[in-house]
Image (spheres, rainbow, N blue to C red):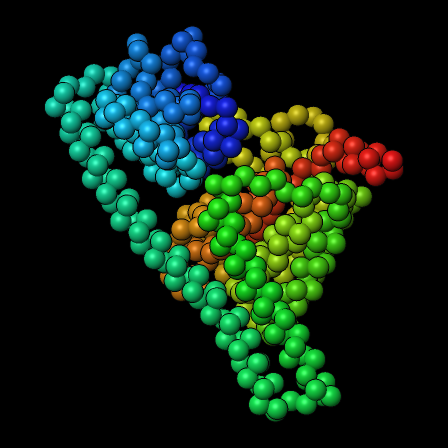
Length: 403
């Protein structure tokens, strides 16, 4: 299946590639152009992000399942008449989420498979009706997932609020003297709960407006091992409560990266909190990191893979971090969806729903040009992410600092 994206937006192209990568059983080829070129009229699907375009160019097949128009909400209001003239078209509002684009592509595949090369008027109407039914089911599904998401948010807020409130009541009652050793421990745990609430609030804000308002990370030279150590300090109360053995092995001389130190610390904290949550008492968590050769190109229909190499050079161009825990395995069918905001969640020990933490991890790592993923390793679930080293940016930063 050949897909052409007509857009100047690199993020849209990346979203399309990510969604296609995770669609099973699809042989695809993705091409991109900043403007439409009639020389490339053989695509099975066109994705238009072309200054509010809502109708296909003359001469192209006008079937609804051949064209997807990505437009800003204001463009829909300003071009109501054009929308009516392009009624069969499918329009997605910016910013396009992974879930919406994946649902649409699945409908396109279904329609193109059923329609064949020739489709009559009655057949086209029947196909459109079937897709409307599927869309209605998808809306119901997303509504259920939204409800589950809100329930998880409330649950995530409840635990640190109850903890902080309980300790405040303990201090106000005078049960603990300011001179006692317990007093400092109570304050430390209250501080931990408050920081956790701040992280949850920040995550909600980022997930709500992060895609609407493009904010560049504050890139500076920083050592990723320092980020890991700071995160270890923050999650220490969680690990201590469950008597978890946490080990760290950050290797190599490539620890200095061009990153937003605060954001990468947040990635570590969220991944470690997730590991602590699901690791049983007395279990273990292992953090490893090392310079890594990461091939960022994706071949036709092939998934991105941290293990794949495409060229002979083995020079590290990224730094890879793995966080493995001894908790329950992640259902294989949910390995790609646990980083979504809206995912199903069936209980305290169910790892199919990632929650806010994993969603914000994907947002942060993506803003750094990296990738985060999950897999089931022999010794337990493993969450990994890679961050490009960006040697040119590091050298420029050092030269500027010496001035």
